[in-house]
Image 1: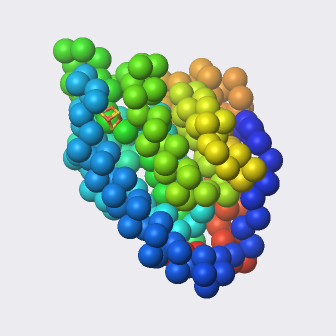
Image 2: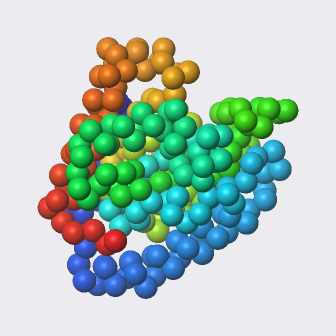
Length: 228
Ligand code: SF4
């Protein structure tokens, strides 16, 4: 696990004004943005995000953002993020905690990707590939707006593209004094096993590290109410 930036944003808990602002301004603006993403057709080569429903984003009220590189084929087909082999590793790590309020990633995080649509290799629609730089650039404005609206206190990323995309996005934002803590994990795909094992003694240790981070985030929420 790589910790990129120390937290500078205070999240002691939303005031009533903040909760009202969240309900009347942030949530409607998020829905508009999600609609824009769903109808975006900038990248011809991608399987469109339109298959995802709004619930695929999870919970915008915790102040925690989970960012992947792009939806994989299985997630895209199931219309639920992080449900392919790599996503199931992350979900299993959270389930270990068995917290009654935060059983799923959708309970604990607002979930998004650096690239919102599914990238497949040419001629192989069921395959997954890393997003191209042009696709990351085309999609980057959406992530900027998500972060600007949500002001997350913590962003958890999976994979190099996601970590770099988030750090780049944070440098673009106007309100740079409100920097979230960024926790970058390697991509949990079985195909990335070699990289994971350079950083952790075993897959089990990697999952244990995920569980530890999730436990810490849930503990912090216990000290404050969330917007949702
Ligand atoms: S990847 Fe992003 S920019 Fe490209 S079509 Fe999908 S939503 Fe639009």
